[in-house]
Image 1 (cartoon, one colour):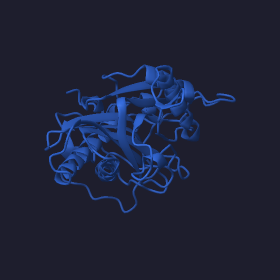
Image 2 (spheres, helix red, strand yellow; image 1 turned 90 degrees about the vertical axis):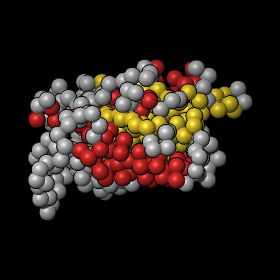
Image 3 (cartoon, one colour; image 1 turned 45 degrees about the vertical axis):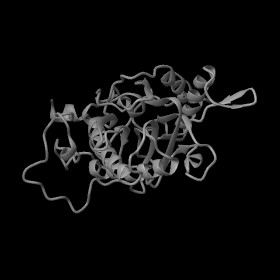
Length: 330
């Protein structure tokens, strides 16, 4: 296993990164129309086509999911992904047309030092197109794709991924762009909140600090306006799930944020999680199996959040926020 979301059979991941822009796009492409849902917990989300993912809505499957920087401008990225898929003849047939279903979410990275003077049209549609055409099983982490311009309160954020096999035998994976108002680390130090879930030293192997430090009465928060942060993620499993079960999985997955980021789901964040099921392996028990898959999703997403920050590198622009490796080495 790669310890990437692509360990879940039936999907590929692509990035498009622009370091001068200090932003980018990440896309998940599904090999076949795939059941998915979404859960939004942050107070300032930016999303596209999330209404159709509700369990009672007509469209039963999607073709891709898009994570992007650029705030509201980044919503254009999904249009580029849809264009790339339509060129391949992928989409639901409506007469002679093919309509790809590409929900997405964005994070705010507009004041991170990159050149955002793009004129009349933002570059995100082209970045989405490029990310779709770059999709494959292997992909880098850190300051790439949707995580290019991401930050946390005191360290460079980034793009993270992780995978594991649930107790049921199903594969589970997570992909996340961490641009949190809060922190992934204990105040002032290198230790990650997600340390209890770490596997094979994937984000430094430091464990928890000992003794555990007292928490400050007032947590550090980024001094930005509402909606100027956001952690956006995709979790996936190879299980056969309904849209309602995917919704429950997305709800459970937010505990992964809570184990990795403090504080989280603030009015300043737009925290959003998509859940997808590629339908390779049925459930033996629709209730208990889903609970165990949800447990694995929580663990995996927490690890992916820590990996996003651990693998990040600082942006090349002067005065930008340092990375974990710059500050703590290793």
